[in-house]
Each structure stands twice: as C-alpha cells, then as structure tokens.
Image (cartoon, rainbow, N blue to C red; front, top):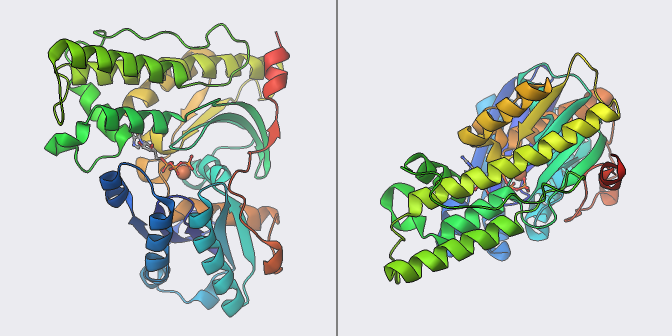
Length: 369
Ligand code: ATP
Ligand code: FE
C-alpha cells in the first residue's frame, strides 16, 4: 500500500508519501519555527494562516518528488488530534478535500500515536514495547500493545520538557547570541550546555523522586531556573539585552536536571512494567521519540537507564523525532495494514485538540508497590 500523510497540528506544515515497506517516496515540510521564534512563541492565528498558505504546495511538492498522482495512493492520513485547533483544522480540511476529490479513504491520525510508531518504519520493533515521548507539548510514558492500544503509565502534570527548554532559552535570552538565533529552545539549551565549563555550578532539586507513580513535573525545575536567573541578574547587575555571565553553566544545569528527572521517572515506570509483566522478559525495548529525543545528552542518559534495566533503546533519527509528514503517512500504513480507523464517512471526522493517548493507567502505577 501507499499512503499520503498530512501534518499541521502545531507549527510545521508537512506532507509525505510512504509505502508499506517504510520507503519514503516523497516528502515536503514547511517549518514556521523562525517566524514563531521572532514572536517569542506560537500565535495560533498566524500558525493557521501560514498552514493555509503552504499546505497546497507542500502536498504538491511531496507528490512531485514521489512522481506519483493522487490516484496512485491507497489512502490519505491526516493529523486530527491533539494540537492547536486552528492548525489542526487546516490539515484535516485539506485531507478531506483530497479524499473527496480522489475517492480515496481518509485515515484520521493521533499525533502522539504517530510519534510513538515512527520507529517501526526504520527499525524492527515488535509490539509490545515501552515508549517515552518527550516533545514541545507532551511528556508521556506508555506501553504500546498494538497500533491503537496504548496503556498510559505516566504524563507531565504541568509543562512538557520541550516547553520547559523553550521557556528557559527565551528567559536566558540565548537568541541574542548569533550562533543561537535560528535554533529551537531545546537545541539552544543543548548547544549552550555543551559549552559549559562547570555543569555543577548551579544546584537543582530532585523532583518527585519520593512519589511511586511515574508522572512527570517540570514546575520545580522551572521555579529553580527562575530563582537562579534572578539571583544572577541581581548579583551581576544584568539589564536589558545582556545575558548572565554564567549562562552556559546554568544551561548545563537545566539540561541535567530535566534529564535526571526523566530518567528517574522512567526507571520507576520500568519497575512497574516488570511487576505487572507487561513486556516479554527477554525482549524489552524502550522507544524514545518527540522533538526532545534529538538531544544527545538525554539519549545517552536513557541508554544508561536501559542498560541498567535490561532494555534495548530505539530512537528514530532526529528529523523523524520532530514533527513531519512522514510519521503521519507511516501511521496511515500501520492502520491500513491492521485495518483500523479507515473511513469514507468524512462528516464523521473532526478535530480533537486535547485527546489523551490510550487507556489511563496512571492511578494503577501510583497504587502498585
Ligand atoms: P507535541 O508533539 O507534543 O504536539 P510539538 O509537535 O510542538 O509538540 P515536536 O516538534 O515533537 O513538538 O518537538 C519540538 C520540541 O523539541 C521543542 O520544544 C524543541 O525545543 C525541542 N527540541 C528540539 N531539538 C531539541 C534538542 N536537541 N534538545 C532538546 N529539545 C529539543
Ligand atoms: Fe510533535
């Protein structure tokens, strides 16, 4: 089979055509990142207008690169949940339009499910497996039992790690350094941390380590970042566009604090998995994905946790961890093969901006000893 996938849930207009062997026949992506960086955050109506402006040529580019016609695809997959409502609508409506004009069925896709399954396009990973999704809007740990069967073990009670990095990078004014201007907040923090001479210069608390559940929280780290910045600004009389002198060390501290927290919560989740026998004893895989999974430091730390807990670690290449049309097309392939959620009834398809992933097991984890 061949599926055309469309992604517009946030600030990337993406389209790709993928076949059932996982071959990418064509791909196009228009990122709005630079525009939103200049605004200091995503402004939904602007995101919508840019999606509207770019969706048509992005889809056409993907088809042209693949040298196929719309009539050659077997289905059209499009992200309908979760995400920014104004952004989601653009992709969904364009997907419906393509489905209507071509007569091909529509496959509505859950953006986080797509992040979780992307790895299967590039590497053999069988169900069930454990997935940790760390991105700009989410932080969630789940057991993936089938294409559409997820057990949600834990999630962030407040900010997502990508969001925490983005806010910290903004507050630290990293973009005032030329080398950092075009980078996402997360990438900027990673680069700054790599320039640190004393990663332990700033202290951070261990968050939630005493809790038996495996939810996540960035609030404690965020407050601590704010305190350190205010203290440094006062100490060094920093004003206006100036950066604090110790900015690289602070970034290393932030990256370390987030990483430690993710690792600690992940390990807690893995203990629950063992206790409940949710994965085969001799074949346990952790899949890491979402934009923050591009981070080399975090990947290395996760590798150590996996080694310690008897898991193998699988991470898609960076361009498949951030948002793209490929993962949506691949999700369409997965659903086509499993014959799940393929429809001709376009009126029954709608967006859902806040849609949890899978069955909520977070309470079960909290109660297990
Ligand atoms: P969601 O998938 O939750 O809806 P999203 O689609 O906006 O959110 P992604 O595109 O998956 O998120 O990821 C973007 C996030 O990844 C941003 O917050 C960005 O700062 C972060 N990020 C990108 N590269 C890195 C990196 N090298 N280190 C840390 N974070 C990174
Ligand atoms: Fe995403």
